[in-house]
Image (tube, rainbow, N blue to C red):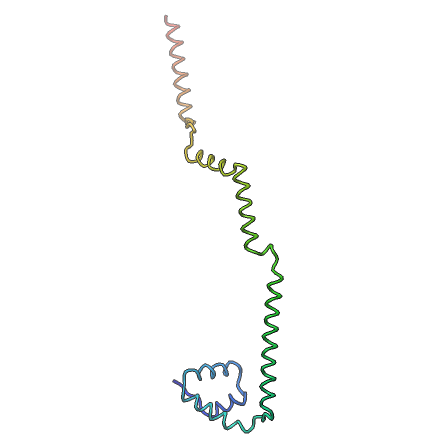
Length: 156
């Protein structure tokens, strides 16, 4: 496992690294205790240069108020989003329309005519027509039989 030096962690603490590199360092902190110790040492060394908080109670109150404002804004946005949903977008409306159309089709007999059509398709009662070749052969034999009949009448 690769470890970062204390100078590299100082750059991290001073915010001198790119966003991608900072994310890489943060992910590394989750899995490496040695680098976590180096990071904490860099924070302690840099602690003197950080601004001092004069009144910690006021600072805490200010931060908590800002958190409450963010939560309130988020809640208001979610409520506004829920109120704007029209009845046409609700599941109940779609199910009601589907049920009404089904009842309408059942009462008009559409489903029954569809089943009758399906039965006709499954059991066709069509008589097969003879092919064109068979028709020509039959006509030829009929013509030849008529010629034979005429020749027999003439011979009598």
